Image (cartoon, rainbow, N blue to C red; front, side, top):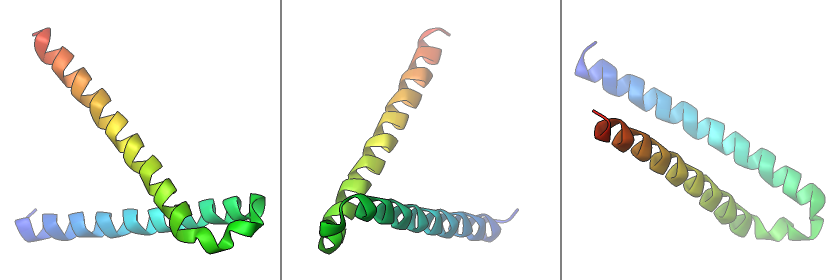
Length: 76
C-alpha cells in the first residue's frame, strides 16, 4: 500500500469515526432532553460536558496502555 493509499485510508477512518461521534452525541442529547426538557437551549453546555467525558475516557485509556507498556519493559 502506497503512502497516498495509507493517507486516504486514514482519512476515511477519521471521517467514519467523526460520523459515529456525531451520531452518538445526537443520541445522547436526545436522551438527555427527554429527561430534562427545560435544557433544550443548553446544547453547547451539554456538548462540552459530553466531550470532556470522552476526553477523560481517552486519557484513562492512554494511561492504562502506558502503564501496561512500561510494566512490560520493566519485566524484560
